[in-house]
Amino acid sequence: MKNNRIENEHDITKKMLNTMRKGINRLNENEEVVIDNEETTNDYETIEKEVETEIEDGLDSPEAKEEASKISEMVNPLIIVNTFKIYEDSGNVVMSGSFQNTEIGWQFSKNDGLFINAENVNLTDNVKEMLDKLSAYYKNWQNEWASKIGEYTKND
Image 1 (cartoon, rainbow, N blue to C red):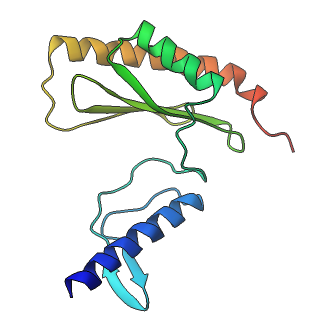
Image 2 (image 1 turned 180 degrees about the vertical axis):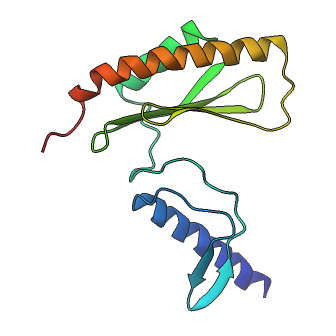
């Protein structure tokens, strides 16, 4: 019985990843999933971010390396860039990362805004300053990418 549950959870995870790769925008907690004609409830956390067709970090591109260097220099060296992706079809740019000194995750989306993910974080003066600088950096980053995204989008 336990083995069957593990297989079902594995199958649910595989189906979630396949759904995300197909470009579905949101998966919600407690969404019903059908596996081998067996209805199950998905009790995974809500996935709140827009998901495009590729699941790659994109950190090997020259743009990503430049962005990682700039944010470290202008905001704080404790800021880490984990992903960077230019979506040619939608004209969006998404960059995400975390703070080295606390459990805070962040995401920039040119089209959708700045998102912070934190739970039970000690809001020290240093963390507040980093959040303020990150927010100010996002405004400049968004404007910069709004003006140069045309170089990367597909023209039909």
